[in-house]
Image (cartoon, rainbow, N blue to C red; front, side, top):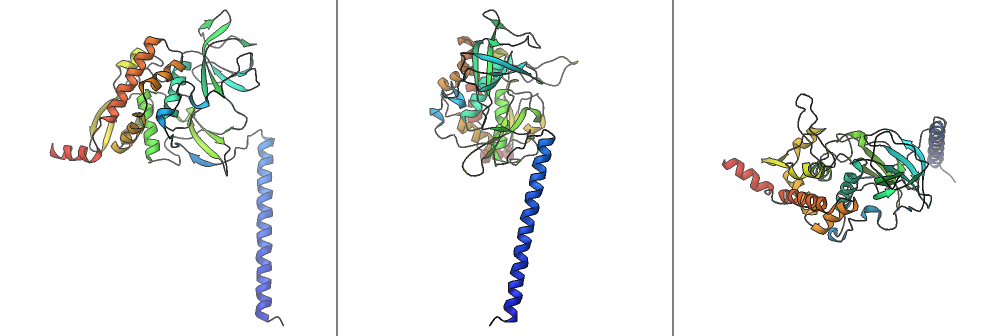
Length: 349
């Protein structure tokens, strides 16, 4: 015989189950409506995965900086490259193109192509997710119009030193991520990325150059926080404009080789000689974070560093100049005092 208490418990469970079903139905309806609204408005629905800014690169000394993050398998098929459309925005002219295998790429023309190709490889080498790119010394793009800026040409109507950036179908491109508001604020990984921007002399640090890439993986996938535009590197960051005179440069090995990197150490903080955009990011770089990056970079050989610049089609003399300049900056980081020793020395003074 069922007791009154058991009847009440059965009713309670029944009501709870009904609430669960109702909640699921409402959630499904809301999600479906939001998805439909997104489709009606032409908005792309971007999946959300585990936020990732840095991943353990494993054996850094074994990484191939000539082929970079895409390796041999992702190289574009240059048997036929066809123009799709012109891409808007940015300093450099860009075309959306399709290669001989049907893979789509964004081809960047002009001065930033070389510097970005090399910068991506150095970031990727120590574990930061990046775009996949390659530098093509000369390419003919079928149906391409005249670019909006004058660029170097080759073999008649070909384009010189073109950076091909992959657009894999499986990777969903989301919105931008912000330097001062993201899941990694205060972490050594984000601090280390800022140090790398100083090492590369990237003076164009701004949110609009960042992108979140959803990369399918086992489980929920990854929302990789990537710097998509690294063209304003390997020059000089300058200082505040003097009578509005431009003092910055990009892809200028001589400027890069002469530029200063670390200014001084004060307490547990490192001050960098940086005059680019978003200078405030460099005001709170901890010694331990700079040393963490130094430890990663120190595992790179000169050959690997040189390969990053060879991949960007720099001349042998410029490869040597840039390799020596990067090594000098790595050594500056390596030779920073240990955090405790730095604080003690300042107290004694």
